[in-house]
Length: 457
Length: 130
Image 1 (cartoon, helix red, strand yellow):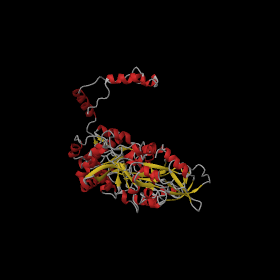
Image 2 (cartoon, helix red, strand yellow):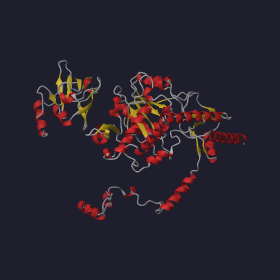
Image 3 (cartoon, chains in turn cyan, purple):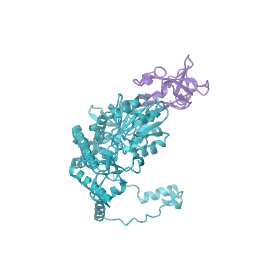
Image 4 (cartoon, chains in turn purple, yellow):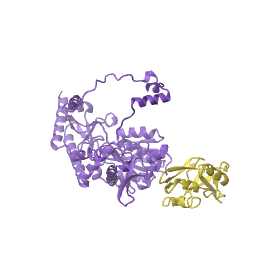
């Protein structure tokens, strides 16, 4: 069916029927001061060849920097097959389709994705994905308020070691829906949340505790102790995890004696390239006991009237087209294309491949820490176990150092000054399996040179 | 005409109320309501101790076609949710006025005046065209 909206004669007939002379007249109630009359500064249209040249020229301005920035988005090798398959026309759509059951292949991909993510996190059930890791955390906080019926307070403990952007998104989205957030400070020496920081909340009505693993500093939290502390007080555990790390670390479903209640995270490391901050995708898993409070779409496996396997959207009574204002969420789409890529990525890597990616990333980060802390004026901020990211302290402000490194084609990490002023001159650095020993040496040499040059000057 | 026991009170939103000898009340949805919803697959009932106002959404019944809120006919404190419904929500279909009860409540006051009698409820459902 061709998509032809309305012909001019149809528009004329409709306008005549409602007694309006032009489409513009329909917008009369918008004051002239608020209207955009023309789009100044937008050049005339370019043809395909012209736009192609312009865009390649712009892309070259980015250069090909060597990046040691993580801070929530991670550069991993993506096998060529991932996007070759994900880009096929049959998969190439951003959304779960309308008349979803007519697209059995798409539903099967989502079903396989849900199965893999549930298994990776050690939980019972996954949804079909959410927009990104930060919005998934916001949804998890809202879900905890609905699902934790032992708590009336709608209060969520949010450690300062959680990604600052995630905290901001959660507080913006859930904070305006009557959920209150309490900050939990991290230990300055360890860079993680300790039992002592939670003690002031003992005996209070708390709905949920967010635990990020590894936390924003790359440090491994003592998840068993934190989860047990929460469980003993009927506080829900919301785990926010890096999916790559789960190939080596204990899955949230096994944290402490009882495991997490809700698990969320950013799916980007699973086959999605870094691209100016997105599009990425969020994942969410939970226990069957809470599935009716989980937002998002869920694909189930069933049989048709002839007994053949088939896939269908299920548990839709939670969703906005049925439950309206009382739906579990009114942000209900999924990130179909990125989930498709992630499913192919996980299929190609398998549990052993993902574990190798995680192990090599950890080893490269150890190598990076050793190389950089050998330099005068650079030391590790925390004496804690880490995954593939860590905080270093410099003897001078970080921003000028990062600018000088960028001039040498190196993105030297994420400056923590804006979000964690109290840490001093703190730099968050990351190395994944994409960084070779030569890359690390190049970074260390460049940093050593420019710090020494500045000292000599 | 569905089954409407004469000894119960009713609401316009299709809940029933049974006064128990200990002064508490038992609350459920009517046979008419379960028939309209179809096969129930899930029921969420409130925790004991929860304080409800009259008209507050206090339970959810989900069928294969819809999820509906159940509104508390009276203000009071929940003394129990029906534990059997977690495993067997179909009890509401099979025995809406008996084993399919949703919650028990200790009413905050004796103002049952706003509730409908069986005859009034029967008139309501027939006026709705059922």
